[in-house]
Image 1: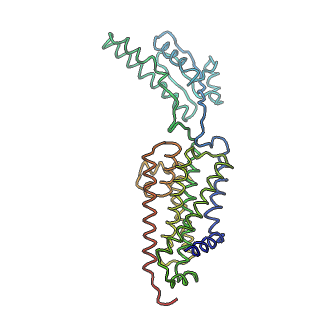
Image 2 (image 1 turned 180 degrees about the horizontal axis):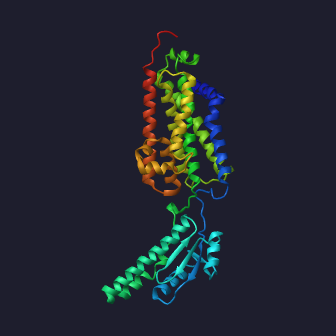
Image 3 (image 1 turned 180 degrees about the vertical axis):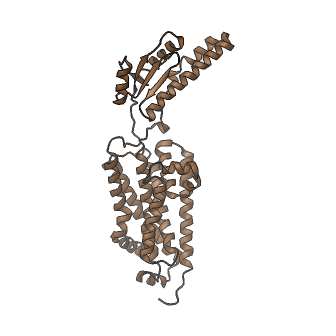
Length: 380
């Protein structure tokens, strides 16, 4: 048993082309991602201070009560939410908006309005503030007309609007959008264990390698051979994934969360799913060695693409239109597990992702065993 484990380990780590895809390529890809996105803002779970949104206020008509109330509302939002600039003329405000030194212009009038230069998160917040104010103002007017005796209670309930608006993020952390590419990268790296699995299955087939011919006539049980291969390959690939994690965290400075235990669980299941996928795929069909290795590139890159490796929003698009694909795509399940661990703080969803990966791994191993077991050769 130990003899088989030892020589399978030595043989695997000396297979440099396979180790390139399983270890070196994800490291290279992560480095390219880092330099493409820049080093700023890639601390996926770091704490960030909220920057107030810079705006200008143009007073068009303060004669109405609504205009006075709106101006008081905006001033109450400073300095936590808004950073009101000292700009009084509309021409100066428009110039500042074009130069992006401010992000919006509020017009104080009987009917308040807003002007923004582009679409973005901050601009959406400014628009939401105006919308909420108008809704509350309309509600007050309706109460004044229908139930004037309740005006005092309504105003008292609404005057504490600002303290109830807090900047919070899922799990108490803030996620830079670019970090999702690194989650997808680790998921892809986990699936790259398929290269190790395919090579192992090819070494077990007598019609594809001399080693396979020798192993086919050994009295050792086929299931035992699969478990030995699985154990060695899993250990090697688990180390590969840990190396990638350490490189991202320590060298590139990208945070993957504070829960080390959960991170190791995801890495464990990711390594398992990648290796078992490769073993199962390598046992199917009568394709040549080069053909199977070529197709392995596809079965790792396509799930990675669907999980957001090349286009960050792809997983969200699929979730919106065909969520079953995300449940069946191991790369998407792995990426979701990373989100649950470091962003969502959702233990139930995290456990569901781990359970799906465990079921997939067991299914792939069963397919591999049945595929090898039914192989028979007239001559070797």
